[in-house]
Length: 247
Image (cartoon, rainbow, N blue to C red; front, side):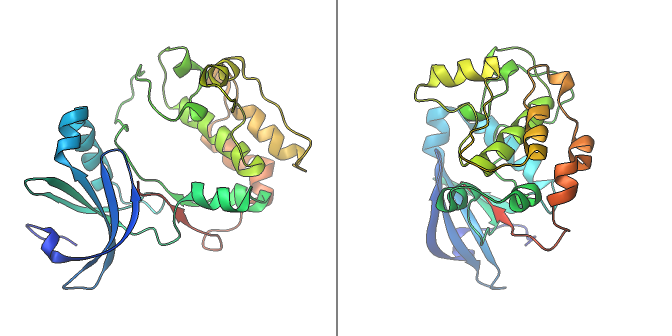
């Protein structure tokens, strides 16, 4: 996909895929090669309105430099007078969230395997220092973020616990009708395992060791991979579904 300059005229624009805060995503086909991609079209007026230039620049710098099977590839980007266009790997299987909502919840095998492609790096940073930025969907925020304390990579380990729970139960663990109640439950780590789902003790053990208020005591990534629930349920590479997200 490398070439000196790109424009929308180099692509056949297909169906509408999704919409985010700053623009829309369409299926596209590069005319010369026939290669199918996703075109994330971001409107400059929205960037101006929300002062999102730095975030977009960081998103491009980080994602364009990543070549990993679990990261959605950013092949190229270009802009014209009105738009910035990101040329992305096409996620043919759709968004994880939509699939989870359609099936209700995943089996323990699917939840433990979960090989995904991560996208949308607007709030990502390259840093070894503690951060103070509050960002993200409320249900996935770690207690230290809710309490506006300095935080590090351990917030991602917390989020893995949230995702494991949501995969198995169909909803995040601290969900509440009102936002302030969700935040209160997060800070208290008000973790409950409903009896309506037949979830193994090993799955609950992993979740409980990730959803720990003291970030230094959360299970490390290496220990997650060694956890008995993962060892027992995760399928070998290449034998699982692959899901991605664009918007």
